[in-house]
Length: 140
Image (cartoon, rainbow, N blue to C red):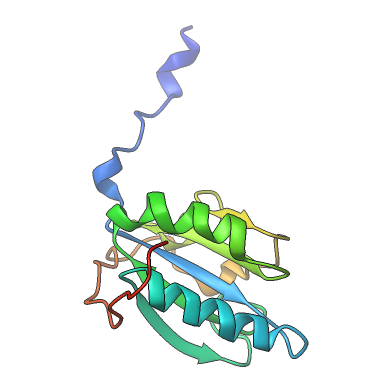
């Protein structure tokens, strides 16, 4: 029997509608999170989400979200790798599979944290890019 019979075809890149980065903080690192948020807004065309000072959805710690289009990924993610400081950042694609996006398809910058997958659907509509609420004034 051919073992390849059960293999799936690879996912196409067009399955990714957009990306999110979730920046996690606590009382001790809140000022660092504020500084990072300012830096991001000054340098990248993104949508900065609300502050969530308590766990929300699948996120077991306080965080804010940074939503961005696919073409921002190659500049923003390496920049976050160099500038996240003590903060943990979850970066994930937005496809039609939120549970997989936040777990198996995600990458961590800094220490990985708990994701409460039971709070995510296996399937839903992909989140399309939003209008950015910032206009960068500095180069990455």
